[in-house]
Image (cartoon, rainbow, N blue to C red; front, side, top):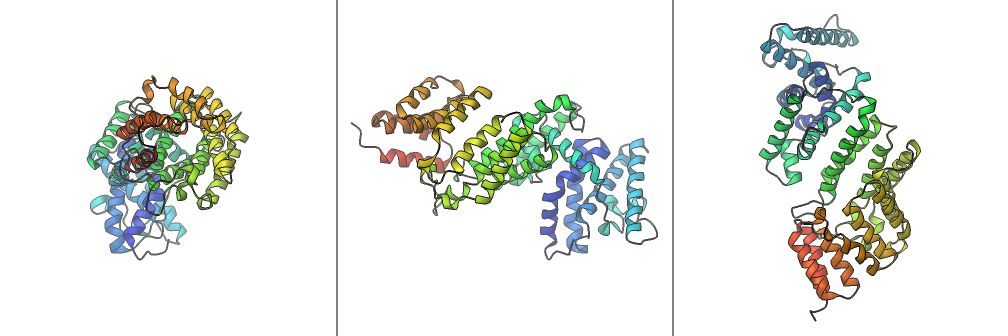
Length: 449
């Protein structure tokens, strides 16, 4: 890697790209997930000191891995005498350094082996190490890392924080900003997640074939939750947090590469790509939300649409029919491939929502189906569907139900009832950008009669 004019930026860039592989490899060689994450963070801290002083190494990822392994040796040396793990790790590092030296024409291992390392365990030649890790193990390491971070023993909030930290490479401050919570809360969630994994003795491994579907569902759910928060923030002044949404897309792409025969992985990737394709048109120049029927479709990201459609075709090819994420992606494709809002194939959207409701029953799915029905058959039919959902506890406390009901009542000319619903939605909504939309709808209603 060439020398960077800004070593700190180089550290951040390498960390974002390589952190999952680094933590995964360290977890494999140490057998301790929490320790591996700590070691990786120590390697990162060492890079922030060394690279500005000594220059960016030729193989930055290999440098981080070498430092991480040496810190692991220091840890085992402090915690016990020469254990089998300590000896194996030292032998692995020494053999790797010998190979690295040979590849550069050196007579032996890097100058300054771990025995002669100074504070922090970094030898004199570490900054030029081209050690990385066994390429045949990279995929398994990252995949195991994703499954561990999304393990069912963890709460959803802890899984999200841990996934963004160890797989996405985000810092606690970044995660806290994305979810509008204090940094201390994110740090507490990550710490609690590590302790829970240790207490449950969760092994660092890819689940067995028979256990994978259930565990994969949790992984997909966590990634989808990250994207959903980025796509439409639950709180704050902005409608979207695109950095968070794009991080979820990146995680989905990684997962699709690691599990190419899993249809729902491709289905999720298709859904995220097709949904994100509309991001450029979702806000006006003043940052106000623009609803789907008023968006300038020329601003949609055509590359994302092509990627999403390709992933959707892949999901249909490798699976036996589309799953829940694939069906949602097919609905998104109906929107993104329609030249105008009026040309949307609403009948097909209704059918897809009906199939989704059979496969993954949910009041939110029913609510979305009602919106599609209102476009295909009219607001009166849709209102009957929505009214059946008013007693559902899942939607109580959410602004979604009164928002949809207020819109349907507006279209039916029942302004007074619509006003009550939209005012209730305004009271329940926590996102200021969405609240602006609701105020606009309220202002557009005729005077009370």
